[in-house]
Length: 112
Length: 120
Image 1 (cartoon, each protein chain N blue to C red):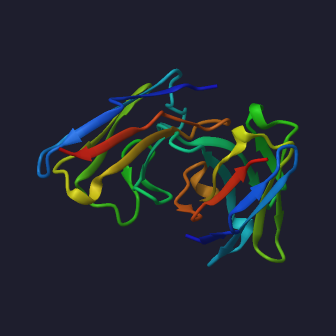
Image 2: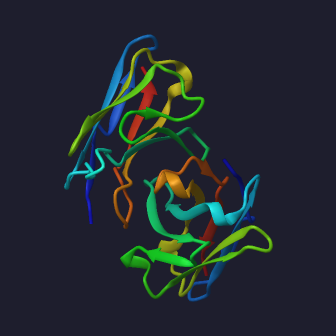
C-alpha cells in the first residue's frame, strides 16, 4: 500500500497570510501518462470532505484561485495564497493512483 | 456531478451487521464509481473500498476483506455497503463518494455521512 504522510499536523494561520501543507507519498504518483494522481480534500467542521485539487494541481469546480497545488512524484504541496476564515478545517491529501486508495493523516488549519 | 443522499444513523449491537445506502440523483450509476470512506470519532479518513456499477467490479481494502459487501441497484440509483461482525471499533461516520469514470479515483461528490454506532 502507498503510505501518505502530511505535515504539519496542526497549522495556526493569520487571515490574509499565506499557508502551505506538505504531502509525501511512499511511492511515486507519477503515471506514465504524465499525470500525478494526488488529490487534496478539505473537511470543514461538521461537514463531509470536499474536493479542492485533483491531479496535483487542477482546481476543482468552484474552488477559489487562492488555492493551488504543486509537486510531482512523491512530494506535493497545497498552498493558500491568502487564508480566509472560511478556510478552516482539516486538509487531506489522497493518492488516487491505485487501490487501496490512501489518505494522509490530515492537517488541521485553524485561525490564530 | 451527482448528488448523494445517505440513509439515517444506525445503532447496532456487537456481532450484528449494518447496511448503509447512498442514493444518487442527477446522473445514472453506470457513469460513476463509488467509494465508501469511514471516519472514526476524532480520526482521519479511511478508504473501505469501491464499486463500479457498470461492470459490477468491487475492490475492498484488505482490512475489510471478508467482512464487507458493496452492491448497486441500478433500478433505484442506489449503492450500498454492508459491514458484518460489527465491533465497537466500527463506530464511525460512513461516507459514500462518487467519481465520474473518466476521472478515475477523484471524488467530486460526497454524501452527508451516516453515523453508525456499535454498542451493547
